[in-house]
Length: 169
Image 1 (cartoon, helix red, strand yellow):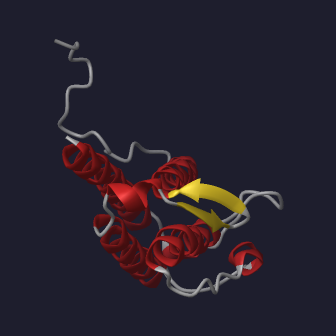
Image 2 (cartoon, helix red, strand yellow):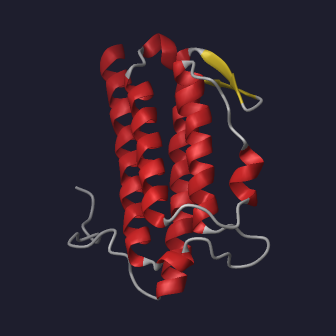
């Protein structure tokens, strides 16, 4: 039973990470290149900043802490950038980071899911780290989707072809 729960938790977490990657891909495909580093205002981040931030956060939490890789994150630089890679390179960096994180997550067993680690000043179990990565990725995916919808004034089709009015059985 323990192995089944571990497998299900990891499977569902990876499913949500893949879902966020797909949604960000749709957003980037909908936007012109010049929109990637555009900021809505001085207190907000561009989509480019958010993707750099996601790469840094996912690497620090899911790759460094779960796999023991060096933590070389420079968080302030993620937000300070006012220009940088184009949307294809950003998507490639994000996709590569997520794939590496997924590999780290898939290697965990129940003991490692419960083991507490220090990450970014927080004490978190492996499970807590995965929850953080998944919800943090989803949170910023929502920001990217909102900014994309605002700039493009169109539905992004995340649920195209699905009837979301189906009632629970």
